[in-house]
Image (cartoon, rainbow, N blue to C red; front, side):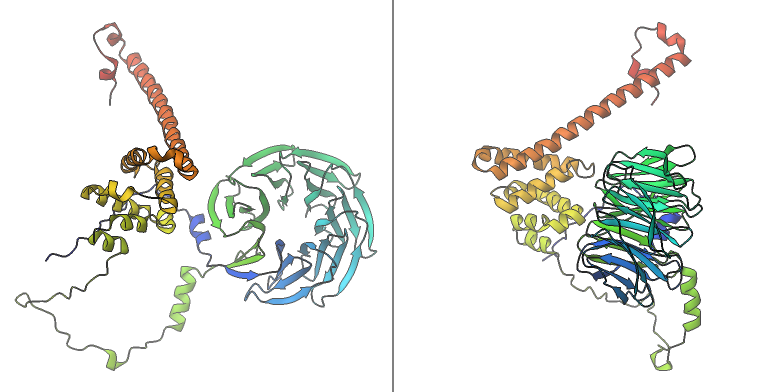
Length: 518
């Protein structure tokens, strides 16, 4: 008796993605370490001094983590309500944060002491930053104001009220202590001169502004809100670029690689890496939950990402190949002992008869069902969600085998509920894929022939037919567009050919399709 022939899964080529140096760089970050917190991670920030500790603001506290082992070193809990936007000073010794009561609190990170409380806002303070002089603090509040505070005297120096909605983002120039940028839910980004409280520039972002980044050069600012990330030129007050790579609200921004890259986190669970200058996506980091906050360590070795479900992800960069080889040479030891060596190993000659040890390979479950002629169960096996999403080639291979056997109609018929929905969903989802289209069109015809008579019996079946119809209509629209493009290209090629060969125009019995060069 011959052995059962396994189902051959043909792996059809997909579109190749271009591998660049940036892609390899970001792929070098290892698997993230997940830390669970009590509430959504509002803000994360790295200290600019070694060992680059990480401040994580969540719920009514700020925890300072070690970037080396992801352990909590200190906890700042002097908040009666929610805390927002914990930010280190450049030397890492002080930390500023806002709260839901409208206060701005200043902490000593070494002793966990509360040094100052700046009172004056009438709404929650979501963001606050140290100024370039490091003796001043700027705060942005839901009371639509931007305030400047003096740390030694604990007093408010200035208050700017030119926004018409919550102010949730901002920053202070590192080059000049007189330049402040703020972003508001009134869709505007405003640049203020503190010397006269005047608004120098006002940009319309088009969406509520969630986050801002100022380039250290002071010439550009990056704003995020809605599904858009925009770069503005502060010298002439014009937009440089509008990046729309996310499909949900962009919540946070961060620099990396010495401002060579801009990272944007979104509620669509992705972090996009844009290369500065060309402003193109060079890599995408995927996460299991909506991203609320994001930061990269000054040495670019750690990425911290805060989620809406309270998870904090810390990713450390792996050692480069050169470092691994260097460490391998240092730590390499010859562990080979004489008793493990194989001496005088026999090599077979041409005249020898060799017996190949053909071990029995375990059949996949779908092949087991095909071997026992259980065609419906074989199809059910490859219609599981995991197989559909990760390995659709296996599902197509089994369908092809059923077509070869003449058993596809029997496997498709008699389905109800979840089994029927899975089949319809697979056909609707991959009908547009050119690799599978020819096969799935045959399956679609069989589905229509078998289940069209039962349309009035189930709303679920009606919904699946509507989805299938939408997928087919979309393909028809795309084909119409391609036909128009093809006709336009043919007309252009014909015009070029006639211009080069004017004598052909006088010939009336020459057909245009025959004269167009292939």
